[in-house]
Image 1 (cartoon, helix red, strand yellow):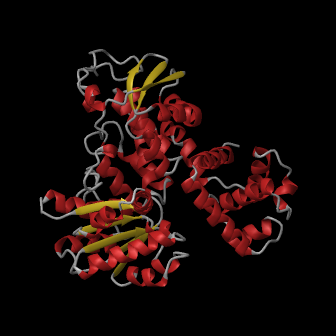
Image 2: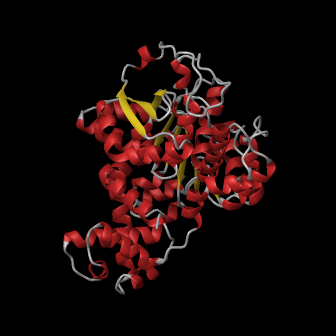
Image 3: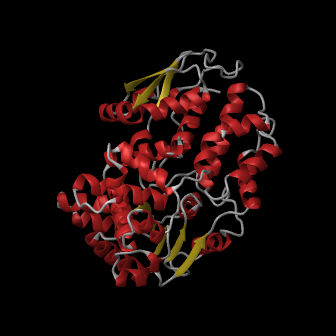
Length: 463
């Protein structure tokens, strides 16, 4: 197992515990420069990223490395911002001292180390080439969305326009969305394509207003042939973003240009959006993606396992498919974890070893946590009494922890709003709805606060 494989395995673990936005912000363009028996030298793109990783994610990174190789005790961070010159550096031939396969020697150039599929983003379209129809596993949970996406590639702007795909986290919405764009790129059709998460659309809009470049912004989006917008639910409550998206939509639609959206919920369930925009979302084809059944989960694992069946056998694949029932991203993360352990051992794992390796993931996935334990841990974290969380004081230092407790009960443990309201001092359920929405928005815009919540999640599952 070489440096690249080791770091990809670490990134797979980290993905399970942080948001996609934080992952791309802080871990993009990181890679292992060197590794000794008990330490790793990690390259980071800037001094700011170095400081942030050292202060906020160091324990997370060290834990992931330690899980893969218990000999690793220290991590050093080095700024490597000149990517072009780095790609010319040769890695010295040597055998890996971190229990990697003894047959592995390092004669690759550093650009191969940097060739993570996660980060091979086309700067013009923002598309990731790893997402294609060929590697999308179709099951009963997603066959309608898949068929609609394929139909869009055959009749751009003329059938299913707009196409609106919705479903839960980690079920393949982004994969399908980008597969549409990559299908046209593959055929080298001369069309203008842009994939953009809705948060990025907002950021670009804000920058355009600030820098007085609104004409450039409008031209950039309104001269497209194919616009792909991911996680459109995040425009809720953002009036200026909604206004600009509405006019962009109308311009493209009138010109028979294709628009595709994804969301974690159907249009009618997105709160705080203008009715005129909601009607545009509902004006074309709406397709949902549900949870994959066992057969689909197993098919996904088998497709990833081609070529290394000697390391991961059928029994192991069946076990992973059984114990990770909902989130495909978590399913793939669990599989990557097992592959990393098998390669470090340089031999297949037994079922008992697999169960042990996945124990942390399964603890989070399947663990039942009583509401009182959540309230207690939040109170301890913020140095409060449990009665402060349950009480009705409107002091700022008490309101925020109380809202976080509500958010964790809702998002992590799936308690109903009414149930949460009862558990926290017999409040009105609308108070809980407001609290969950407020905390979600704060997590999106405040990285420091986001880390607080991540740490609380970790405390929650590691009792």
